[in-house]
Image (cartoon, rainbow, N blue to C red; front, side, top):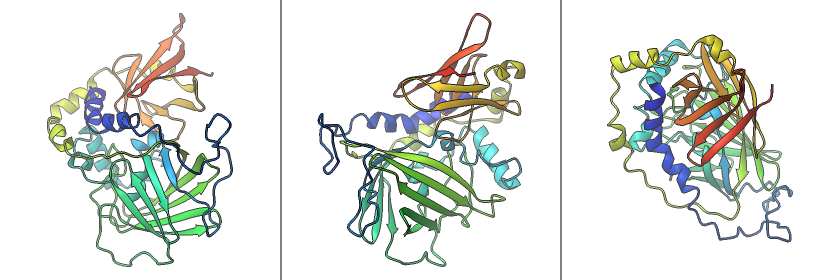
Length: 351
């Protein structure tokens, strides 16, 4: 039941974003890219350089946050989220994230605006990031420091500097109204975030994001992601206007939460048969399915961990998506199919 509610709520906010990626300007060639004889961009060519000699990060990028979209703190160990923050996270999860600020058209903190599709504009003293969600970041790289006692804002304040070929961004001054993920990890105004952007070549950029909030978490932690260039396309207009009205239809009562906990419970010995690595078909990367306590979880190629909510012994829901395991005659899982907005993804068991 939880999966049904979660799928419905997240669909309100995210289906449109996935569909928009197919309706961008696809016929316009990105100028300045090296191309082969057929006109295809050479994405493995060396990274371009700005006039000052630093790497040029400019371009439209897509970064898949994997399981971190649902649970940004999935690499932390039990107890490393402070008790008040863990309690609030669990309550928000049980309420199916219906109170997420996105339903009021509020922005994420600046560093999270790079999850999904975004455009980088680089000058000598400023790096601008335009997110497909319509928000923007103004990263000042003219040598100034972060303000000492800023008026807290939704997106926060950001300054950047070059460390060799890595662009290092320090951000602070966030209010405490945003969530760090879609299931509701909180933060306080003490949060500081450090990002490292390193463009490996034309087509790939490594991104590391470190979160440090001593009032909510026992230690800082870092997630590592990969952004991939989207050549020959462009951002289009996005307007947030209907989320809150749609989300108000979902009212979660305590009785519904109790029913969700008791519905479609699958025995642990059944869940354990699904554990293992599953190789994606037609694209690089693999998923890892593993039991954590009594919960079945999915670790996507991009990292992080997502909870698989059972709807039947073989069908699960994960962050608004449907995942179905397929078994051979002996009952052993052979593969699963993950159904998302863009289509089906098949992953074959490796062991």
